[in-house]
Length: 322
Ligand code: ACO
Image (cartoon, rainbow, N blue to C red; front, top):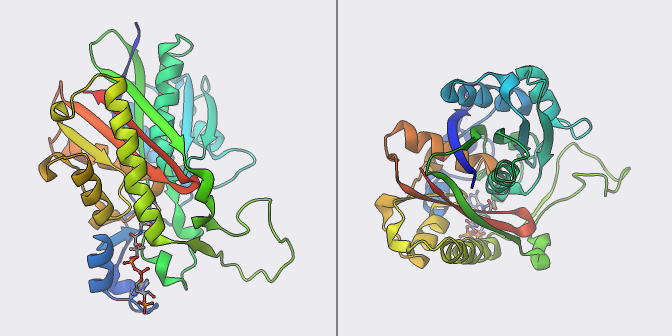
């Protein structure tokens, strides 16, 4: 059995901070409303393109793993805000890294993208097809937000996180995942005209419209992540009591609290950094993983659980032994 072990990690959060107080200067909102409803205090806004954010996170991950870019067999960029769709943004990341031996592709599972990417990478490695895969979750959502629509403008931010997954004989690494999609209500999180299926010549004002039913997303997020968690723990024969640390998607502090309650997890076992970055979609889980490692909250041998939920409505959970 070939194990798929995370050997390197890195993040890139843009230096420009947009606080709730800053937002209140140009839309009708306030810090109290945003903090009490979401837990978000500030978010980062990138002045460079998504490929640059992903490139910096990837460089940190490579350095952490002690690898060079030419060692990579594959680059998976999980994103729903690609800088370019044709060609893929991952091809630009390859170009910047000079990772000439890597296959590359973008993957869109929205906020669940990193967990989807992790299982894909682990499968490529465990099948014997590849030895070293770079998985990046990265977004530049500031470019597609409608900054006049307060319901959504306050929720999101930019950033990227990356991991290197390598074939390994060590008794650790990826154990399993349960991925899925609740497409029955896919229209409750929907951006009009963001793709080729659009009203090409209809009143273009440079702003997208988010169709967004926050309360329904909230309920389905808790159900999706909770169900995926139960299933993956059963599949991998892991007792919920044996989980040492949980890294959930950071969409809303209240969603994280509701998930913790549903899976009976104490708050000290849960990584939370939403207050600093808001919802960076596919980047929340790898950024939170990096910060948990920087803070010494994850130790060798720990049993980890990752869980995410996003547009689609995609959901997923994965278990890893560190
Ligand atoms: N500032 C001030 N007031 C606001 C704002 C704002 N930014 N946005 C909405 N309001 C107002 C509304 O207009 C409404 O006013 P009204 O009562 O006079 O009509 C009032 O606040 C309440 O609005 P609700 O939408 O009912 O607020 P709710 O308590 O549901 O909170 C929120 C909204 C935070 C979006 C919540 O529904 C939520 O967390 N949803 C799930 C998370 C989510 O959707 N994340 C987005 C990404 S999806 C993902 O990552 C999985």
